[in-house]
Image: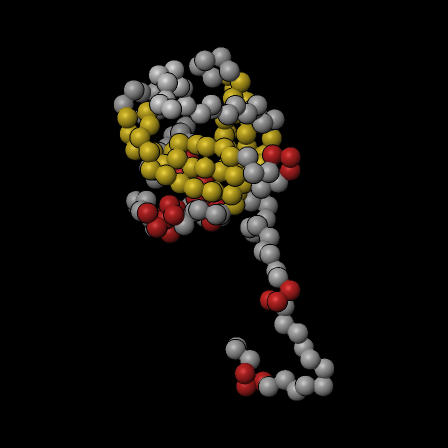
Length: 170
């Protein structure tokens, strides 16, 4: 049967805003997208960060933030660019300490699967809806997600068998 003209496609899922708090997240994905420049209608390249909640009742929920791929230390009365803040939260040093002058794909892709904390606030959108705003980036409390250890990965020491020190790989 042919598709009727009144088909509207899949429905967009709506999620209630998260309570204002600090959340442990992982950077799940980073895409290069076109977005509006700050306080302008001009379209510019941006990095779209997808963050995944790692803990609590919101575990698995996604948050998104478009960020200018510009390295900036800020200036008189200005904050550093968001990319710097994410980089610093993940690596615990500023990009300038690594003497980076530009952002390349390796730097951006190196952030995927890294953990940090987001300070999430609520705000009213231009349409009058309550939405979340990522307000700040902080260092992660953990080193990263816990590793899964399988039983077959744990070495077994057999009793009464001598250890051959020459075959230990260190």
